Amino acid sequence: MPKFFQKIYKVGTNPCVAVPRRVSDDIGKNGYVPVKGTINGHQFKSTLVPLSSWRHRLYINGEMRKTCKAGVGDEIEVVLEFDDQPQETPMPRAFSEALEADLKAKTRYESYTPSRQREILAYLNSLKKPEPLEQNITRLLTKLKAE
Image (cartoon, rainbow, N blue to C red; front, side):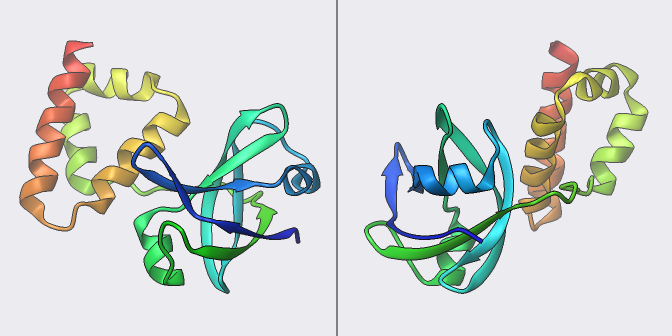
């Protein structure tokens, strides 16, 4: 598995590391690439984001930074490999029920790309309390029906 050391830096407000060209070459995939590996010995799953031909960036989210005890400016050890397992993101029951009750919103949601659907589900799953979840589902349904 390819290994490298890089300092975490920010692009806008998002912490990330540049993946060395040799690592992108070793993984052998271009575009968005699902990966798994370790940061400072702690496991993670993520997606490499393409920069240019056969170059990638790895965003280091808050959970990853907390787990590996590193922040912007810190050097981390990253070990990567291509993740060939499908990335399943569960649908919150409240969202599923809301879509079943509104065919127009459900049809629009299902027209989204799988990556956009996963992004929405990941956000909804990140909400820990029922009130914010319900509020965000209501907003999302309004948006889906308006499109």
